[in-house]
Image (tube, rainbow, N blue to C red; front, top):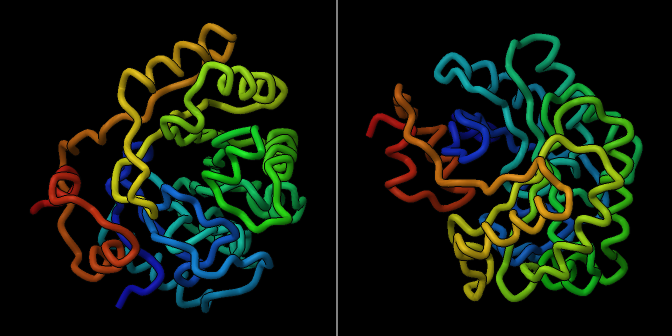
Length: 276
């Protein structure tokens, strides 16, 4: 039975992505309004070991007999950098398997040099930056009271100086909060000072934590992209709908069940990747 590994996830950004969950539901240091995993009932601020690492390794080995993923991706039931075992598992994968590794993170712990060191062998990091305005950041990400956006910004600066792999910064757009031209100008002022591979503009694709969060319109997303281009950020893209795979994957009921327990997936999305 698979408890820690799930998928392959229908991913708009990573192709065939095999998910690995190193935390327990829902372990996160934020309570983002758009999170597809649901609300964070109690914020976790300290790193810990959540899982039996040998179990995780064995599940990965079993899963790749079934699925040949483009990436093994650390995400799932919360913030993966909260796991003290993240670096050990990445090291093990890169030493034993010829599969790329991606880590999706909300960026809050990237100020910690130990966390960045653990990420150094990953092929791709996808950190989030939704705003550099502290008030807007708190409305969208809802961290604990003592946290402010400067910690996320310092973390991204730290990552960009020390990490040698690809960095795809995700910015989640919510109309009325972080979609103004003035907001984009503030983002550009910060982003021009750090190194990253690309900026990905994203919006709601599945149900989020709060019902009032709605997908931003294509016109809004295109306007924001054009503003970034005008201000000198050329490596920016809008995350688009997932393409249907040419070669569909056989369903493994346990992997699929574990994936569906983490968030909702439409029949349409599942049919793009699985033989259903």
